[in-house]
Image (cartoon, rainbow, N blue to C red):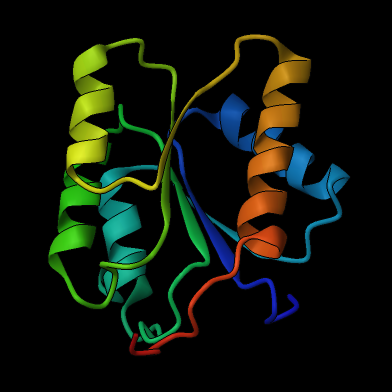
Length: 151
């Protein structure tokens, strides 16, 4: 992994969507490391260095979190709420990447300070392209604050 591009935390329980996302990142030539969390608990463990990720240096947070909402164990909404409530993860960019058509999911995501809300395309090619664009934007085009930087 090139540290300049950081880590993408992909929080997704659908194995097909994980595979498509990884293909899209590979096709885009992204140098970011991709960590996959398959449920909300695993995502929180990674972010806060607990459970299977105990001992992880939580000073190094992902460059972006791509977050599905409909997750087992802990919902994406709750993951987002916990991230925004903790100073260690409050400013980590979160893109809600979901198949939900519910207006309440959109509103709740932005109320909890999601940086973006993207509806997963149904077609294979569109899904690959949207995921590629998200990866490129958040790891190469977007100017992120340095870890621990005070504004």
